[in-house]
Image 1 (cartoon, rainbow, N blue to C red):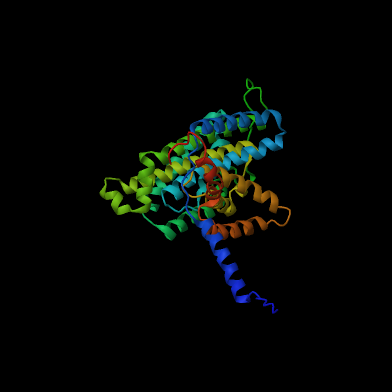
Image 2 (cartoon, rainbow, N blue to C red):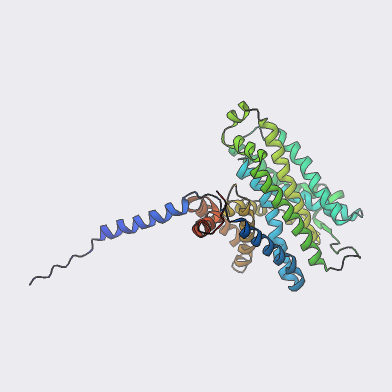
Length: 355
């Protein structure tokens, strides 16, 4: 009796492995529809998340409140930047400039004796005006040219802060009194936490409303086909300019909260790495998705913490590697992974809403 042993060809093994790798990459790159959970589940998750977020600063130490507050601040930036880049298709590498304007608006307003809510209001108004004025000429550029203009804004921000020393105190920076009013029974970290929570919740709801409404459709139309949008009656340049200014408001308010949290603001806080982290946030979270801002914010808060023990330059290297990896393998960001993981289970739930 003769036993024939068939050895696996190395070429066949290589091709089989290549096929598996190809299928995994295709699965990761596949677009997926938004999750549409039943209303009862959406309400349950929203109420549970609200209860947890409201309780966090009352039962945790200050360093936990600091971390969660920073995540909410990055979320606010991500919401505005995703409106501009994800839904509007306009490249911006300079939102750290608006972040800095908001921070200094709070600092200067505090020196003038304004209350915290009033300074946050100014931190939104001033970036809106500056963003509108910059957007009028800048948004006539496209793609790489617009990216270079906004990159120049980010690079010039620290030097500009030092140049207007009578207002910003130059390299010395400005100390900020972040303590709550006397009638508010909260510590500093709790007070700023609740301000950031209110701003992030409002920003999330407004962004979600804009993305799903008529304005959101006009943003996408301008992004995908300017000529068609203009034919249908959309004022392309006004839409772009207002969108740029609106995204600057988000960055400005986030910068104001950041200054209040740190109780100090100086030019070294607004370097080019900050702008890179903002871009990383929306790419990792997921472009043109509202929940992606939250996931991206968690990522950019966690990565510097993990890499700081390696080297000061490790954070920038990590951002670069992650951006390349997501561009090639996860173009829909972490939101795409969440949709892939939960989509099947949600489709089997009773009372599910239509996609």
